[in-house]
Amino acid sequence: MKTFIRMSLMREKEAINEHLSEFTGVILDAHILETFQNASSGYISNNKLRYILDPNTYRLAIDPIIDCTDKRWYDRIIQNFKIQDLINDQGLLDTTLLRDHKRLERFVIDILRYQEDRISNLSGDIESWLFLLEESNEDENQKPYCVIPPYFIIDSEELLDLNIEAINLSLDKSELPIYANIPIYYDNLFNENVINHIIKRYIETDADGFLLWVTDYNEVKERSISLQCYQSLFKEMKELAGSQREVINLFGGFFSTILASKNIYDGLAHGIGISESRNPYGLGGPAPTLYYVPILHRMLTSERADDLILTVKSRCSCPVCSSKMPSELKTMELVRHILNVKMIEQREIEPLSMDEIIAKLDQDYEMIYRSAGDTRTQRTFMAYSQQLKEWVNSLKVL
Image (tube, rainbow, N blue to C red):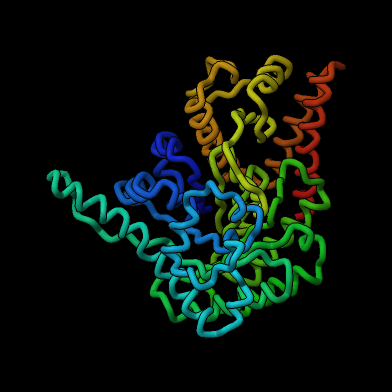
């Protein structure tokens, strides 16, 4: 099972450093790289990390995101993607202009080159200054794990066609593996005909691998019927892709980790406390201070996590918080705790059979059920624990 960590904030480096040997690489969105140019490129280069640089081209065509004028990455993206002539009066990337074959081909080439060279170019600038200070190491001109053709959220047949054409145009444009990003619009997940049509179109390409995600899909809130559709999507995609082409889930939490551990797909990406799901139309912003509760496999406020620990008598055993309550942890301790527990979860479930995983989820549910009382807070915990049952009901039909 391959695991990629999605970097969002540069403060996460300390936590990631503790687990460098346990994950495959990092995923960095282009707008994050352009926001923290030196810090992010330097970190990847100095640690010689395998990485995927996601161009997130869909962002440039969505009104709410572009309308937020304080995004310092925007001008840098436009310049480095070389797409000034594709931007309309509202500041949006005009996808209708990409109906022109030559324009689309040039766009594809520029996006691929950006991914191939951007980290090396930025870290090369840093190395030049370090050389003058006699602190430089030899630059190995790192290249990404794969490159991703431009893509847009699949909410129409026209944008599906555009995505597929971009993949086909990319196939002879890079020496690196071409991985197609497949953003499935949430509502389409429940339409079998639409899903089958989308999968068929992508499988028919010669892409080397697939990065699949369902927009705004939050597995800690979905019911078992939805979860069954979700796992069926990935299972079918992997079966059709075959053993030679990887399928990686770009956003997921504990439920997705279970699926990856049982080879429903080849790998999983997740953030540290955030980025386990993504609403492509959301504006983002600072993440709230939350605590990852191991028995529930979800984030709660520190105060609510305190109440749960006192009620259920189930403490986290990771080095960061084994002697502290969640509300006593500082921000970086919360970050380190999250990644510690994520790695523990992955190590624990990989050797287990599906029946053993289901039994453990049932056991945790029963522990919370027996501990719960009649207070409003305790009833809330029961509602949270019901998600464990939803996962169990879904996993039983795999």
